[in-house]
Structures are given as C-alpha cells and as structure tokens.
Image 1 (cartoon, helix red, strand yellow):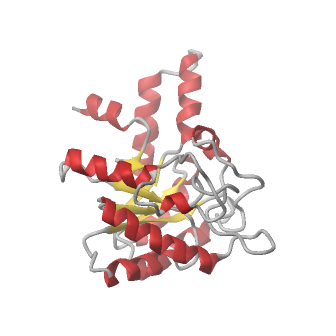
Image 2: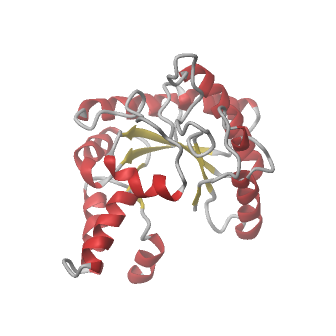
Image 3: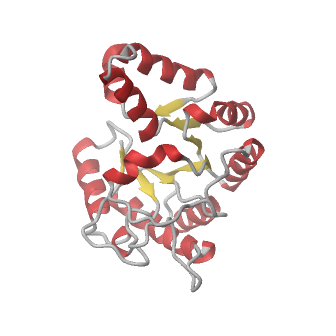
Length: 249
C-alpha cells in the first residue's frame, strides 16, 4: 500500500510533511498498527502535496527549486515516515542525490530496516493530470527543470544506475505504458528489482474508452499490465491492483 497525503494546510516548505501529527504520518502509523507485517506499508516521500506552490521541493529566491535545501527536507521526511511505521519510502521528487541523502540519514539513525524505492526515471508527463486534480495540486508552471524530458531515453538508464549506486533497493520507471523502452533498458541493466508505475492518466484513458463501449475493459486492463511486465517490470503499481488480484486468484 502506497500512501499519499493531502493536508489541510500547505506552506512554502511543506511543514505538514514532517509533522508527526500530519495526515500522512498519522495514517502511516494507523495503517501499520492495523496490518502489521501482513502488507508492506509504503510512503510517498515528496513535498508537492504539502507545499503551497505545488513543487516537489523548497524554492530559492528566484522561484526555482533548490536541490540541496530540498534534500534536507527529504531526510527529515524520511525519518518522520520511518518513525511512523513506513517500511518502504518512495522517493518521487527527482532531486539529484536524493537516494544517497535519504539512505545516509536512515543508516545514521539505525534504520537499515527501511527500504528505498527510487523514482529513477520519472518523466515530465502529461499523464499525471487526474492524480494532480485528486490531490488538489497547487502547481503553477511545470516540473521540467527536475523531471525528465520525454524524448530522452538514455538519461532514464543513467539516472537509474546512479540511484542504484547510491543505495536504492528498488528502481522505478514512471509513467509505464509510454516508456516501455526505458523500462526495458533499465530492467536489463539493474541489479535490484525494477518497478513501473501505471499512472492516473493511463488508468483514466482505459476506463473512459471502456465506459464509451470502445474497448473490452477487462481485456484492455490485463493487456496493459502484461505489456508492462513483458517489458521487464518485476512489479507494477496500478490503480487496478486489487481488481487484478481478484481476477488472477
């Protein structure tokens, strides 16, 4: 289970993200108490849902994202989420050096039991739209200065291998269906598990087409996930996870 938080209050530094009584950390603690080790409790580690500007990090005086200042906030988030009971941290902010920073902070705190899922090849995609609406994103502009250029295939592999070297336990490619070539490249070279995220826009397209009677819903869902697995994903994050589990059972 991957948890995201939508706080009642947002500010420039996303202070609710590190508040032990904030919505995400409270939810992590409650979920971990309920499920124990029966499920892996995962937390999204990014500031975008918590900032009043909607970016994934702290802004500098010119309005750009300050990479190094953001890393400090990420390490604070990591420790807060680990304390709340998260077993796997999903580093989705795409800051340079985020895996090394978080791994170092966790290890220094004696939390080698907490794993890191690195969003290594996360592209500046149009397919995130429905999710951003659902979390009431405050973003103005775009995230192209830190997310990746959709035209750049090689950089996806480079970023993934850097994250692996920094200590990531799992590498992520996001989105999935439009980046199967990148997913395949990363899967061939990675020494750790590789996951892919079938994002909200991919989900919404299939649901909309099925609702209009243009495609067979179940077959399209199954084919889409099989394609992601075929390209090399060891696991797929998808909004159809529980439904697929029922079908497969």
